[in-house]
Image (cartoon, rainbow, N blue to C red; front, side):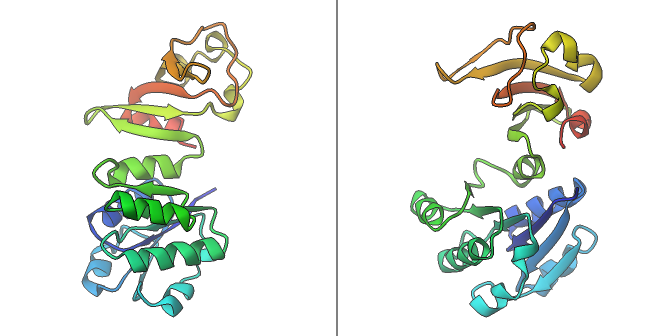
Length: 216
């Protein structure tokens, strides 16, 4: 089922996130008060709305309750970010992500209910999109134009089976490098005969054009 995401604010990060989510098949609503920026998103989003994100009434009229994800991407305006996060949480959006420009802003956004706070210097738009578009991805690292690493939970159909049974290299074109041992807090090499559990965090290496095999 397609995910629906509203990206509020079309700065560099918001544009990158919106385009990446759209390319991954999500329904993307973009919102900004700059009509030129909205026009530039033609062909890279499902819908575009011109609205003043500092105006509570206009934010409430966006229909955010219908979204799976709301990304508040205007880190330069703390008051607008606070209001947008608050409105999204009030209407029951399952996942509210907010861009931050400082530790203080991050702390405030978390206190008012943001599920995840993004610092663009640490997470680019594509990296955020890869994580948000998947139900199992915990982190994503682009190694180069061809190769990437993914930290993820096992897909449901992997649970209870071991590496020998799954043969992930052949069936999914991926290599499982390690898993997180929560008792020690360290990554460990996975025993190929040990069945996977639902909470096992896996570190996987694969070619970027094979992401569709596990990005579900």
